[in-house]
Each structure stands twice: as C-alpha cells, then as structure tokens.
Length: 328
Image (cartoon, rainbow, N blue to C red):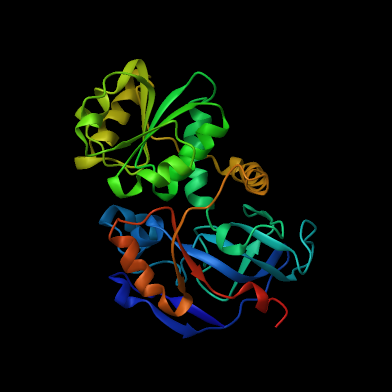
C-alpha cells in the first residue's frame, strides 16, 4: 500500500510517499480502507517537536512512521472477536497516537479505538473533523457551557474554534466569535451571535462581558483576555500561550484551586460517546465541517507546508481514495 512515510524529524521535505506492507488485523482489530484523513496542528507538531515533545513522540526519531489522527473509510477486514463492526461498514473517528495513523491507504485500528459508524449521507471528506471537535467539546463540558453562558471564541475559524462556536451554540450559549477580517463571514455562517475582527478597534474596546474567554489557538496574552472576563469568569485555552504564560497561570491556579485559568484536556473515556454525539449532530445538519483545502495523498507534503503557515480555516483534508472507488 502507499503511505506518507516519516522516518525522521524535520520539515515537510522529510515526508515521502512509499510502498509499505499492508497491515493485517490481529484479534480485536479492524482493517480500514482509508478514504480521507487530515493534516492538523498535532501532525505538524509531531513532525518537528521541541525537545520536551520528543519525550512523548520519540527522542531521536518519531516512534511511528505514519502520522494522521483523523480517519474516515470503509472496514475491509475484521479480526477475530470483533463484534461492533462488519466488513463494508463506513466508519470515522480517531487513530490512537501510539500506533501508525491514517495517512496511508489502509490502517489497522483496535475495535476499542474512538471510532464509530458513518451514515451514507455524510461524505468521508466531511468526517475527518474529530480531533478539533473533541478538544472543543472538552471545554464545553468542563465549563458546563449552556443557556445563559456568554462565551467568546478567539480564533473561531480554526479546526478547534469553528467546532467551539458550533458546539456552544448547540448547547444554547450566546457566542461571540473573534477572527481575522477574512473569516468574518465564515464565523457568521457557523451561527455566532456576534462577530468581531480580532484586530479591530471595536474588538479592542470590548470590556468585561464574558463568562468564558476560549482561546482556541493559544495566542492571547494575559492583558487581552483579562479585560474581557466578568468577575468570576474563566479563561480557557488549548495551548501554553505566548511565552508559556497560560501554562504558568494554570499551574498557579492548580495550587490555589482556582478555575480562573483552565487548559481543558479531553478524557479518553469521553471520546466514544462524543463521536456518537458528533455523528448525530452532523446527520441532523446541526454541525458542519469547515474545509479549507483538499490534497491528494501524493501532495501531502504541500498540505503540511500550508498548515504550518497558520492561515488555515477549519480542516485540511487528504483525499486518499474517492468514494466512488469503494467497490474497486
């Protein structure tokens, strides 16, 4: 099978399309023919992690040679003991980070992995959205976002931010989106109640009006978010922030048991039920994928280069196989 092979850290130039052995499912596993996957911020971080990141991904080289967390495709074979899936099932979900991922023609997944069936009405390319949505859902759940909550989503055009807007709205919150000027219409189309250009004077004049400020891109400074929070409000972020300030404040809040600053991390046990919820939201038209660009597997290095610019909106899709080739 063809795969995007990565055997060392570096720039996207280290990625090569190679023929590798097609995996075979062991007991309790399923073999998925990949139709679509994505390139996201996590993939780019794994390609060139800082020193501390190498403790997780591998000291000298990546522990795995095929990246890609989001996956959508068709079950081609099941191992002994698999009960939840059958050959021919359309599925989507997330690949475990400790084993080879979906940037290949086939991937083997444990039946226990966060994966579920995909209705025929949802194209594969629109289903590789799980990682960003999963991170956003952790904030919505941890902070009990719902009716009466006024939340600001900063960076609302990205994979996590666009998910945050939609999930918060579906829970009944009042949502304000802050984006670059070129993404204003996108934020409105996602259902945000109020939309601001994050570089505008109008946004700079906003005062303490939010219960939650959710920095979905990890770029806000302390001064930027503090002026926006009501007394007793919470700042939530997806990253350590400029000069690691969000991480330091979060550590301080842990010491004094304050919820002023939070870095919500999704619980592994919550992945499966969330995927069921996400599937139902998509099927009902209450959640949609925001697709910036699509690339073929052979063009995946270009996809990495584009994601590394930091300018993408929503997700960048890698089309591995066209849907009409399912029976080929």
